[in-house]
Image 1: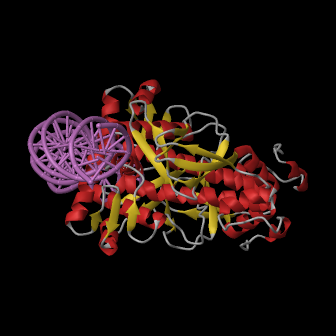
Image 2: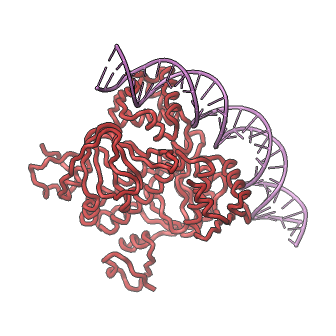
Image 3: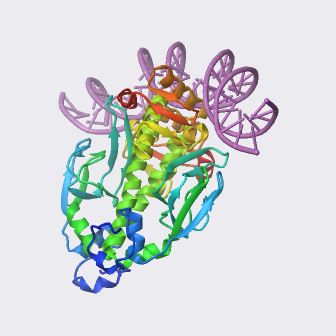
Length: 227
Length: 227
DNA sequence: CGTAGAATTGAACACTCTCAATTAGCGTGG
DNA sequence: CCACGCTAATTGAGAGTGTTCAATTCTACG
């Protein structure tokens, strides 16, 4: 099986190579890199803040949290990375964020320097990486509005809709993260997250089948809550 | 006067051309673009959310706020752009943010499509734009931690240190923005910003010479407050 | 089925917001 | 140069949202 790719140099890649439409896949195939697969168990660190930023990762299965810590332990998760997501694409040589596996997780990784060299010698790669960085930026900017100006209920509603979109799009949310992680993502405490979810349950907006498996019953109402 | 540039194609540019070390300047000279200069008076809109993202701008003089609005008027300023800063480098064709002049402001602009074509045909330009996007991302990520997890006093301390670094680095801050703008940047109300500044004044950390002109007296203490 | 961690729920508290009144700063015009 | 007036900024008091701390319940997994 060989899927078609939009870029003009597809012919340079051996015909027998499998090329999915995933942008990261396209890039690394384009450069000729073979990603290195790794496994991390639940709650283990993939890399720490201030460590060397040597690799760029893609989630094969599982889930990852990227976060920053204050000296007194306060934590802000800036992003959850789910299957297919690319993370760890720092600008400098030093990590500005830590990353943990939320559940048992498989990732594949390539050397950051290889990607940068690819970007320096191949315009298609450079453009793809630029677009990736800009998409991350747009997610961060949306999240700034959430953290700076939305109420607790609005934040949790936005979180549920984001996870629905990114996980399945079916309203069935098998959440990999605990309430504390959700709180650290939304700038709330785990108790406030729990109270918002309970309120949505009382209002008939969602059901639980286990605390981590949420079924959305009324996404239109949720979109209204999100403002 | 001809300053040296790091990239290898500098020789392609006419020797009489003035080339400052500003990355944006280097890029547009590299592509051969001549930026269009424009003036906006205080509080006028440069572009609105959902409008066409046709141009990329650089502040020549003055100051600009980029922000998102909620339907009920809540505002989150995601960045202040000061002299030399580049803004308006959206990913898609539609603006995801609005931008206003905070004071009377002169900007110069180039067509976004020209930049994108430059990135597609010139690796140096592509790399520069990628780095620009990643620096914006890093600023946004730092701001996520501030909005999600810092107290009011810590936010205002961080703001003063950021403005000191970006304006002059001398501890003299001729702030172009009002208390409301600072609040909308920090996820606070203007009253809370004012109270934090008054507290710093009482503690001898800063002095005022006019409400908008702040003099930092003890930056070490401010760095401690920032955590 | 038992246990440990996760999640929920409750009550009191704290920080920030809201609303209101006062003061300060700045541009304009006499 | 000063007076005026408007806007911005400060300050105060009270209210509200979310946090903290604690107790209980749930649930995932051995």
